[in-house]
Length: 86
Image (cartoon, rainbow, N blue to C red; front, side, top):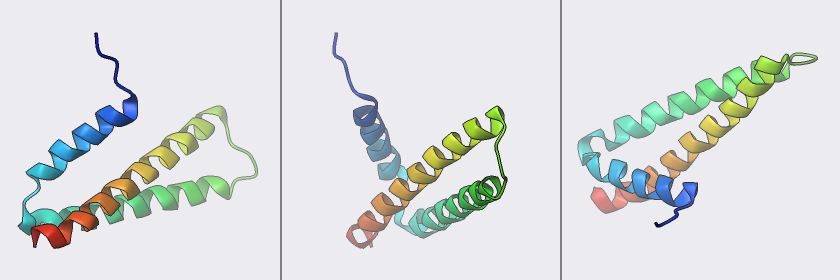
């Protein structure tokens, strides 16, 4: 039985996902991801303005940081691909 790390599974998944994106929609997808990243950053900023966080808010903060990083990774990967596809 083969054991794969989470990151290798994500990398393979991203590769397949990125292959499906057409050149014409690549810019739209990058724009969508930028908007998503901004939403996560804005909500994180709201949480950081609080003097303390509830347990649920602490979990939300961790989740948002991971989602924000994931969106940034996807943006970077798509922007690197864009010149090759254009």
